[in-house]
Amino acid sequence: GHKRTIYIPDDKTKSVAPFHPLDRNWVPHEDLECTFDNQGVFNVKFVRGQAGKLESFRPKILLRKGDRKEDVNSRLVKSLSKSVCDVRTQLEQMHQQVIKRQRDLGKDLESLFVGEQKTSLATTAIQQQIDGLELRIKDCERLVALCQA
Image 1 (tube, rainbow, N blue to C red):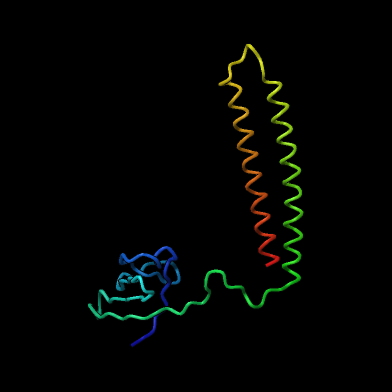
Image 2 (cartoon, helix red, strand yellow):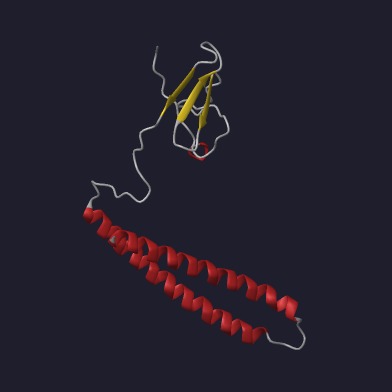
């Protein structure tokens, strides 16, 4: 007869395996056992006290994937977009510098006296740095696209 607030970890919402919900301090409620079915229905079973009693309900969805928030400050979005563009420019400059450094280092490391295995260690690390920069640049492009959408 009394109400209780429970929290459900996000990774449990797609699982049909039983689990214990959490309280505000992320401590499991051992007297409750919860399950989701594949239809979006949430079942709560009382393990102690009212043992065996089963309550079912469909949780209210607050946000759907892809929904836009209503009260977004457009000035804040423009500022974020400008900041992301600035970061992207800096990343592209770094990317060009690292590619140039890789080319120069490749020429410097060519030697009859040093094996290819030893030189590949340095060039592999630089290639990983280049790949990381390219990934960050793509992330910036996605963020700018989200700001404009």
